[in-house]
Image (cartoon, rainbow, N blue to C red):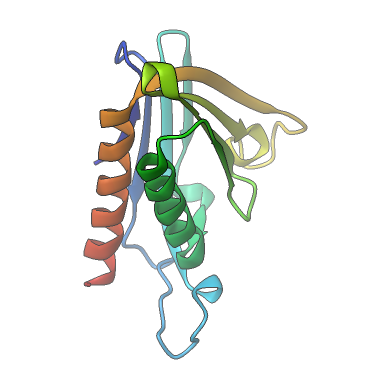
Length: 155
């Protein structure tokens, strides 16, 4: 499971990569921007539940996933006050990691496009949450994302 949790473990972001008919990977394209991996998303806190279900047809490009993984690895490796911002190409969500050196943790902002979660029935704004995660949780998130991607691709 690909999970990112806060220090108190009461905020959870779960991403599930799917092997469905929307999985479209071809080495013949030669461009990871043209290869798609479907996913579902759950954001849970004591006061909020956001679900981006399989029927929505949300996909990452393979390029997006590789950039997310590599950029987060570099952020963790540097251990300097730095910010990394990731937007899905299709505007499903945005996640921002701000490293806080003195606490060796990350302030994380996570915003979901409500139009995506409601299949366009409600639109025009994002809903989100800000929380703090320790470095161990971020590293676990990176590793599980990379491992799940490789498993799905058969690498």
